[in-house]
Image 1 (cartoon, one colour):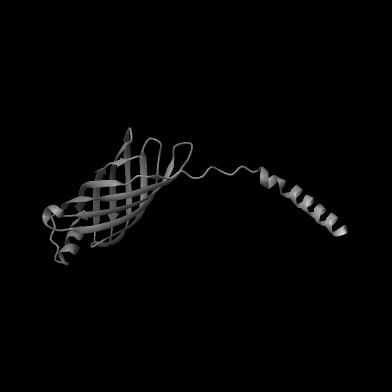
Image 2 (cartoon, helix red, strand yellow):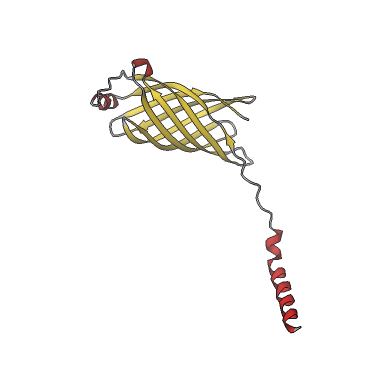
Length: 171
């Protein structure tokens, strides 16, 4: 009988001490939003980038078109409208000049409730690996988002500046 009383006393003591833990309110689960869609635009290449590509037998003019796809996931949104994003942007450039120059960029960034956004992350292309810096605005109209972005990619061979647009649908 003593063992049972000791066990009951210990259980009551433990439950009394952990009651504050039961009273804590868990935060709501993070709301994710998947915003993928096409991207298109132009990229200006500095002379150093053009020379670097020419050494690989790729002869481009200083301005190339870009076509691709962006996979974007918003994985946190605050009550104030600030959201945190993770984006992958895959592009093919130079199609109008007979080349398919691939580029892949991974960006991590933030977007305000007004649609202003900023991100940075690694970029890989035949011109080399570099850090991409991107900024822009997303205009919302119903379920359609229209992102307008400028990206700057400085590398050892030179600078690339891209202006991209596209659209996504919020589901």
